Length: 279
Length: 333
Image 1 (spheres, each protein chain N blue to C red):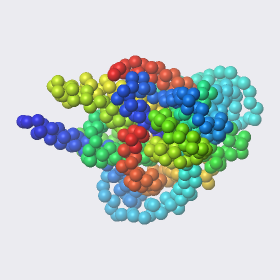
Image 2 (image 1 turned 180 degrees about the horizontal axis):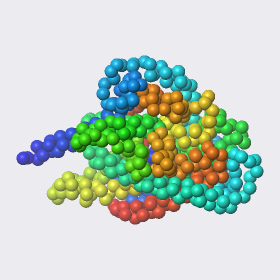
Image 3 (image 1 turned 30 degrees about the horizontal axis):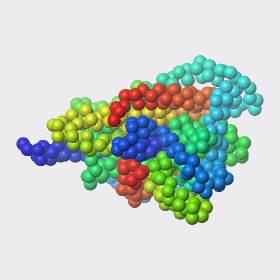
Image 4 (image 1 turned 90 degrees about the vertical axis):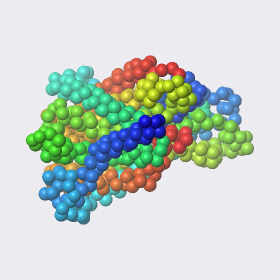
């Protein structure tokens, strides 16, 4: 056997192994989720991998939508979109200053800012603080807590990114009389778009699926985000273990992020693997 | 701490890995970016202090108010008698800790959390490293597989929990598959027995995040300089030799990063457990954060703060030595 044949054989073995593993690791769980979301309650209770028969195409999804899906969706959008945009903007503004200054006090502020990457949030005092501010149970209070705990990662990533860029263009702009805001808007922002995209991906995953803080900070049903709505739905005695409905809710609540992924998947995977520098 | 945010540091790590591969010393792979120290020449040009402050103040206020302050106060609340039954707050000393210890909550939760974190770390890193080795080269087929294995990262941990709760149930598809292979019918309640429940739930957590860990390993593998690999090939090293003698030792930074992040992230586990076992059977999967929520829901805010402080303590106590120990084993290039 010559070298090319060995390589071909090896590739075939590798792809077979990946396919078989992928079948059990990814395809079967998601297949199971999807087919059972289209079954009747009786058929879904068997928990089989079989094709739905009879099809229950709309009923499960209709029930789920009637049980507050759109309220959860709109709350999630109201919370996630402004939070992500604000964190990206405020985080990158600060990161630029941290990356360009060697002052001790700023270095201290930088390290203070990135502590939240590793350390868990103090959730009970957060409830207490928001209660004192009359924000407990409100979406605004929850958004502030989200921003406080997620700015760190954006500052960390963006500071690293900007540090690797020589400051000559900015200096030239200052000499030409540009203000700091103009430099940020017209020079920095366009340059750091790759790292902001990666940051946006992480924030989307982390904010859209956030559950730990929301269960403490959003006790009212009216403010529940999608994960919280799903949890309340699946935990209510009325729907628990009615897998056809729980699965329909799981499918619907994860659909927005999955659709975004289908649109941006090449950039997402590329950005995360090649590193933000080349993204 | 959210796993997603903490894992994002992997990207920053990768940036440094690429730089380090070319020129820098291995120190440049520390997963903590120190802001570049610019010379005084740079500071002089057009910089007014006030406008610079305006750029950092908004984020600093948000972080200090909604992360640092609660974090610091959590240390105080843990030593205060505070329940929903009384408006009076009083100094408790170690009272909250002895209370939850005497009721068996604290010891059990620490034990469960530690086992959970170890299982997540092992399962996630083994699966991800194997996938990364197979998907390392950038090709059209590999891109499809990478995209594909990343999907669980996007779904909510709660959703992952519900899917796997059904798969693992006594009459679920896993047991059906096992019954098809072995003789007789198999109806084991994976989530109904203490040990298997803990291992299964931790594995679901690993399943949910392994796509991201894989990408960090792929980035690490690709940072190994091609010239070194080519030299080895010329010298007659085969695929296995190249992996074990060259790539594996040079994978140090990515390995360090993934081991620390998977372990430390799993110490804060909550979502997957709430949607699979809610801490059961009994308290077999009641990790610290689940115990925290139970104490909070019952109105024991002081006890809840004490448990929260234990999570913080565990994170600091394991992250610092783990990073130090693993970094010492990294190969200098």
